[in-house]
Image (cartoon, rainbow, N blue to C red; front, side, top):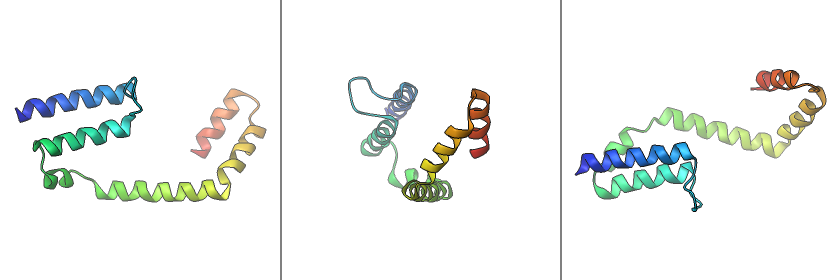
Length: 104
């Protein structure tokens, strides 16, 4: 039964991820992934120790650091200034693409 539950949760999670949201509900990709993980934990198919072992803490800390830096950029107005500058410099789609690529 556990294997069927895990396979079913996997399939439905990836279908939800592909759709981007659940139609008729205010549930997006993050909520879908969270609900799937909670379902597997509550059902006993996966233990908390197993789930914790699958986390890549280095990647999570890197993402956290990038989010903190991004918020600081947003609060300081860097993104607004860059947006205005790119808007001034890009008169053609190719120029816009080049500027966005360099900034990225």
